[in-house]
Length: 217
Image 1 (cartoon, helix red, strand yellow):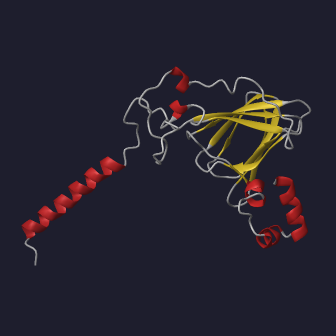
Image 2 (cartoon, one colour):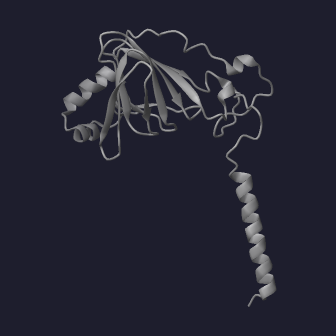
Image 3 (cartoon, rainbow, N blue to C red):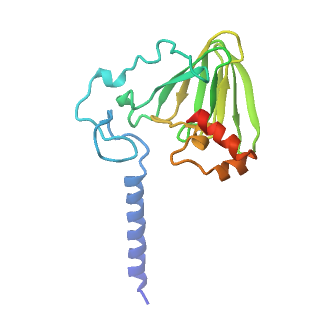
């Protein structure tokens, strides 16, 4: 048997080590003023390595200032302002995007796996919605100056059902929220998702699967 005194010392040591390990590995805050992303560094980590030097341009981006052309199939375009365009966002946990819509323009159903989103309408009118994991659609028409929120990871969309262009600004609680378009992920993946999977999932024929794939290729 282990002597009581030695057992007590052993338990204390385990608790101290566990406490120190917790402080070392679980600090949620930045440990420096800035950590400007070195996008050319080959080191792989949860984020980017810090550059040795930086300047004001690392914290600035003009890409959201003006409307972008929406003459594409969906009639919409999203301009991101995340860490790949603003290296100074590295470790800050925030980013933004601008969304421009032609009349009838759609920001197709998609998810952001690493962020919740708040959408602020600059002008025009949008129908916005998300779908819960219980398959409940939560949707609302939002107008200039109004906000709609999309929970992290849930499928969501916006569509301009009006006759005039619309625009919005999105804010994310991640420096790089990621985006996965549902239709593109399923029908334009590389290598492709098998036709048998898509045919059975959507209850459509192989010919219909191929037709959709050809449009999204």
